[in-house]
Image 1 (cartoon, rainbow over the protein chains, first blue to last red):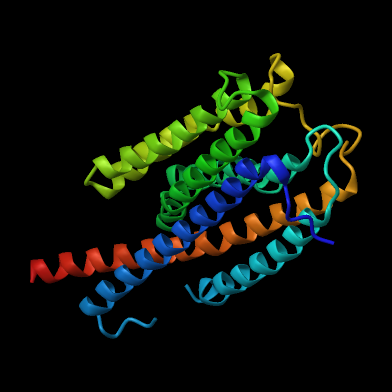
Image 2: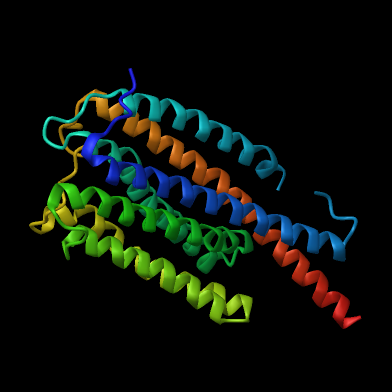
Length: 51
Length: 228
C-alpha cells in the first residue's frame, strides 16, 4: 500500500519531488529544443543532410 | 548519429519505467524509525548527488580524450554533459537542503560534503562560462578541457569528505566496505531510482551531443556559404 500522507513533513517532501520533476522537465525541453533548432539550421544550409 | 537516434528514446523509456517502479516501492516502504517520512527525499536526493559526480567523471573523461586526441566528438560530448551535470548538482543541493531542514534544523551548513558539492557546481558553471566566453571553438575546447580536468580533483574530495572530516552529513551507506547498511525496503527503490536517473542522463546526453553535432555542421555550412 502506498503511503502518500507524509504528515508534517509534506512541506519538505513534495517540494523535493516537485523540484525534481521541474528540473527534469527543464532538461528535457532544453535538450530537445537545442537539438531541433540546430538540426533545422543545418538542414536549411544543406537540405541533403539526412535526419 | 544513427546510434543516438534509437538509443536516446530507448534510454528515455527505460528511465520512465524504472522511475515508476522505484517511486512505487519508495512510497510503499515504511517510515524510517528516526527520520519518519523524510527518508523518501533520499530517493531523489541521492540519485541526483551520484549523478552530479558521475556526469562530472564523464565530462572529465571526454575532456581528456578531447585534449589528448583532439577528437571533435569527445569535445561535443564534454560540452553536452556540463549543463546536465550542473542541473543534477543543483537538484542534489536543493533536495538536500529540503531534507536537512527538518532533520538537522538548518537549510545549509558549511559542512565538508555540502561545501565540496557546491565547489563541484562552481566547476560546472565555470566550465560553461569559459566555453561561452571564447569564440574560437578550438581554444574553447582546450581551455574547457583543462579546467574540467582540474575539477576532477574535487571528485574524491566530495566522495570521501564524510570520512576525512567530521561532518553533519551522514557517511556512505551503500558503496562502502562490508556492503550497504540500509534495509532492502530503501535500498531497492534507491537503486532503481538511481538507474532511472542514469538512463535519463544517457538519453539527454545523446540528444545534446546530437544537437552539438548539428550546431557545428550548421556553423560550418554557414561559414562555407559566406566564403562563396
